[in-house]
Amino acid sequence: MSSDTDEAILYQDDEALHPASERLTPFLTALLAGGCAGTSVDVALFPIDTVKTRLQSPQGFLAAGGFRGIYRGIGAAAAGSAPGAALFFSVYETSKPVVRDLQQRHGILGDNPAISHMVAASIGEAAACLVRVPTEVVKASMQTNAAGSQTLSSAIKTIVADKEAKAFLSPVLGGLYRGYGITLFREIPFALIQFPIYEKLKKEWAAHQGKEDVSPLQAAACGSAGGAIAAAATCPLDVLKTRLMLGKDKKGVPYKNAVDVGRRILAEEGAGTLLSGIQPRVMWISIGGFIFFGSYEGFRSVLMPLDL
Image (cartoon, rainbow, N blue to C red; front, side):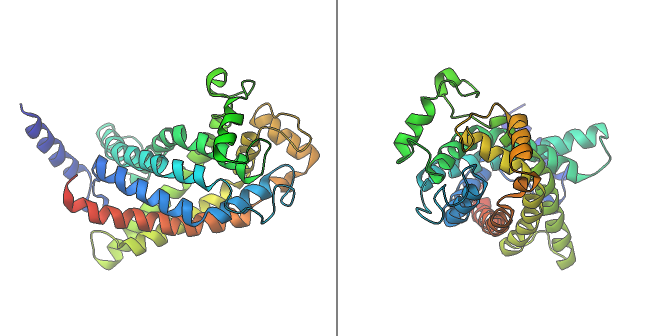
């Protein structure tokens, strides 16, 4: 049987399993649309991210730089945003029908599309964090004016030189993957909250209008709503992630792991510190979600007819 015939049969099977309101997105289309969307939002809202990071830093907002040098680290963000977002969406859109197929064939938790959205989003986040974490580590170091992070190149050299960092392949990569575990631990709950809300709102809004799909502007609003809720719920995990990536407290004592970060915050600063930066985080992600999902759906609608 030819590969074209195989693809045709798989496509027909997918059409039977997945309604028109949940159209399949080709891998390359998701890759390109996700990359463009990621760059758009990260560059546009970088100052808000800097304020959030400095509010969460152990030395405090003013000591970390206050409102000075608000664009420090934008080079790292720009370099990592496109591949990170592209990797997420290509894996997410590819995994979603596969998980949905397995769910329906084996009767897992009934015919609930939210399950496939949550599982696919978790797989996508795990893949995207391979790019996102090194970017976040370098960016956070520059945003908080850490020692040796005056420029992008010096920040990377300083982080890679930290062979004592408790991180993945630290003898080779130094502290570049510092905080990978806690980042994943933050991103997966975030995705489990955001994406089912996003997909559900899109589906209900399209059905209310009697259409197969919503417009990019409507999709942006759905993404913004889901993102705002998820951002508030996962703020404590974001604080742990930021502290662990920065590597040490205001006295210069290194953090051992996420549990150590949480224990020391509660003992030395109080539980309220776990909500540091929640206002800019919710604002950044709700506005960012609007731009991100609007851009993604807009780029996707342009690329879909090209059959990439």
